Structures are given as C-alpha cells and as structure tokens.
Amino acid sequence: MSVQNPSDRHLDELSQALLRLHKALLDAERVSYERLHGRIASNGAFLQLVLGDSWFAWLRPLSYSITRLDELAETDRISSGTELTDLLDSVRSLLTPAEEGEGFARHYYDALQRVPEVGLIHAQVKLLLRPRQAPTRREPDEH
Image (cartoon, rainbow, N blue to C red; front, side, top):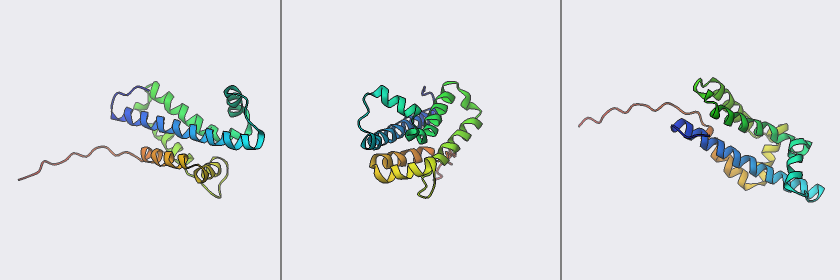
C-alpha cells in the first residue's frame, strides 16, 4: 500500500494493525490447536490448516477484510469512498466481541480474554477504526 496523503497513511496504519491482530489470533489458535492435536509439522502444514480446517474457519472473515482493504488501496478505488466506508463499517462490526455470540464474535471474545497481545492490538485497531472527521478551520486569534 503506498503512502501519498494523510488518508493513505491512516489506511496503511490500519492495514498494518489488522495484520498484527490477524497474526496474534493465528498464533493463539495454533497454540490451542497444538494442545489438542499435537505439534503441527511445518509452516506449510499450518497454512493448509488455516485455509481448510474448520478450527481456523472463524478467522477467514478477518482475512477477507484485510485482503479487501489492501485491494481497494492498491486499485485507488477508495476515492469514491462508498466501498471503503462499507468495508470499514464491516470491520468495525466484525471486531465487536460477544461473550454470548457465535462465530467470529464469540471466538474473538475468547481470544481477547486469554491473550493479552490480542487485547492490546484490538485497542489500537479500534482507535484507527474510529470515524474520522474532516479537519475544521481554526479562526485566527484576535488580540
């Protein structure tokens, strides 16, 4: 993702934070998976599990969202804003943990409870996902 203006810089920061969150979640799930099923033989085997095993299926909506964000930035289609706004709304909704929920919301809640790193990154991502307002013009001070 190229950095050309403050908006691009903000999206780059968001993308990087989402990638850190995704990695932290993958690492945590790998540990949980290996506790139950034994050590995963290689990174290639882990990738195959992430892509095809139901254990990791709950992470796929986040993977998809990160991919879409990067695609929008690379194709410069964010100038219209609608697609980006919809995607950011979707990510905000996705990253809403729910103790009584199911799917991503429930798994995400559990990860936030047991992995401190996930909680720290979650806070960073939430700050970056806050709706941004256009800068307001300051009136010159009168003396």
